[in-house]
Structures are given as C-alpha cells and as structure tokens.
Length: 272
Image (cartoon, rainbow, N blue to C red; front, side, top):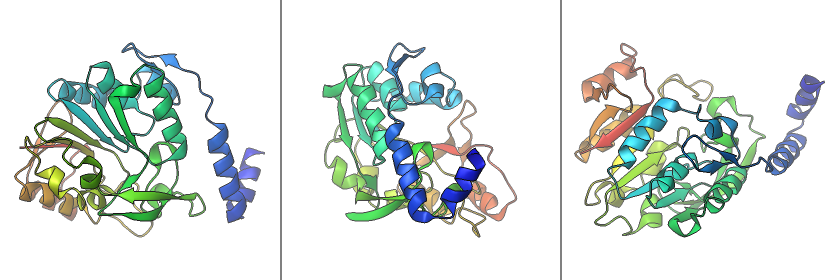
C-alpha cells in the first residue's frame, strides 16, 4: 500500500509537492527528550539518544572548548547548536528549511537559551537572491538532483551571503564555523571573503563530498578541488575531521579528483 501511494505521488508533481509539504507540516510534534549531554532535544531520535554522528560530535565538542562562538550554517534542527549552548558558547544559526527551523527554535527555546542564539532563516550563497531548495530534513540542498531528491520536492528560500549575515560580529572573537549544506559549500564561500579573513581567523569544519550524492551524470563534485584551493589561498591548512587529523595538501586533492586516492572522510577542518 505504501509503495502504491508513493508511485502515485511521484507521477503527479503537484500532488507530490502537496503530500510532502503536508507531511513535513504534520511532522512537528516530536516530544522533547533528555540527551546524554543533559539538554533536551526534539525532532530526531538519533540526535536525542546520542547515536547521531558520534565521531563528528566528539570533534565538534573538542573544537568548541577553544572558541568563543559557534556559527552553524545548515543548522538543521539545532543538534550542534545545542551542544555549543550547553557548553556556554553563544550561537549564530543559519537554517532555511521550515520543518528544521521549527525544531531549531523549539530546541533552543525549551532549553532556556533563546537570548543566546541568533537565528537566520535563510540559505547561503554569494549574495542576495531567492533560490529553489530541494528536499528536507538533513538532506535539503540548493543543488538540483542532489542525492536523487525528486524535482517535485522543492521550495523557495531567501538567500543572503555569510558576510552579510555576520558583518563585524566575529571581530576579535575566535569562532568555529560549522557548515553542512549538502553540496552548496563553494556557493556559500563565494559570499564569505570577509569572514575567511576575520581576525582571529575562524576554525571551519565543513562537510565536502567527493562522489557521494552527486546529481545524475556527475561523478565527482565539480567544486571539490576549488573549495580546498580557496582555503589554501587564504593561508588555511586542511585536516580530516577525525581522530587522525590527517593533513590534506594540494597533491592529495588532485589525486582524489583523479580517482587515485580516497580520503576516507567527508568532513574537514580548515584552520591557520
């Protein structure tokens, strides 16, 4: 029965859009649950019970200990924002997806952190715009065809640049900028020139895919090498975001693009 409904929905784009939007609106009643870190969380069971991205969570919490503020681009439901706030670090959160934003606000407010978090319901690119976003949940993307998301599963979102959102907010502050925006990383960096050069320089932790989730007909992320080159040009080093903290250089990047090397990780840290 479920497969039949899915088949019908996929063959009628307008019905598909109505179905998904209605489903996302109705799926806003998850109860708050106590997490292993002491804060309450709603919207995602794995995030609440501690099984979501355990290795990445350890890395993020370690990085948070040495910064003044978290900037979370693609904040989703606020999982990493709540970690930062629970550690006494103020947060700047960027999240355009309606369902995610609902839980992001709920999770911040219900833990008593509403005065410590700035929330921007926009997506990031090189400048002001209105663009289409495909999908929802943890996989929403500005990249058409990302992760085989149906074309009918689409909404419009307002766009600003990271420099426009942050302005001089980070001046004199050590920031961790956490980015998880499903293939739109290079787009976001086109509007982050001032932020890249902030003093002190931010620490960036960013998910950058190679071959995973690419649109049909695209084998390798076309912006993979460009993203690293942009950081290298600004004096940043690149490391894998894991316990090994393997240094990534330009030779490694070229080998990945050529298909002669695999990094074994899609999360990277950039720092000076």
